[in-house]
Image (cartoon, rainbow, N blue to C red; front, side, top):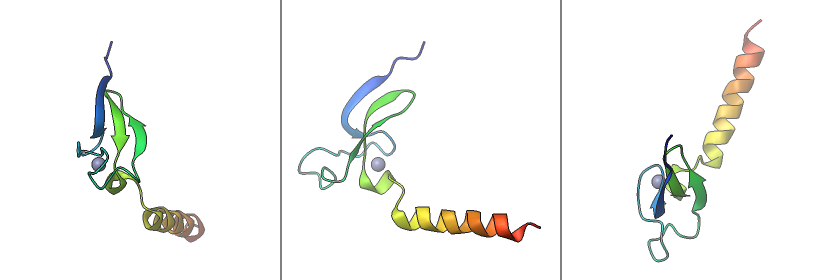
Length: 66
Ligand SMILES: [Zn+2]
């Protein structure tokens, strides 16, 4: 059985500090992976631009395959 480690203020993806004063505190979101429990810093969160382009790509794929 895998034990989830609480890494506190660290980002679960890049392990940057997201604590108050780090500059990442405001936009961090709670995050949990299979092994770690902590936060996700803004840099590791999918941006709206990325979501938009992925959506457009999916749209192009679905309409382009006849
Ligand atoms: Zn990160």
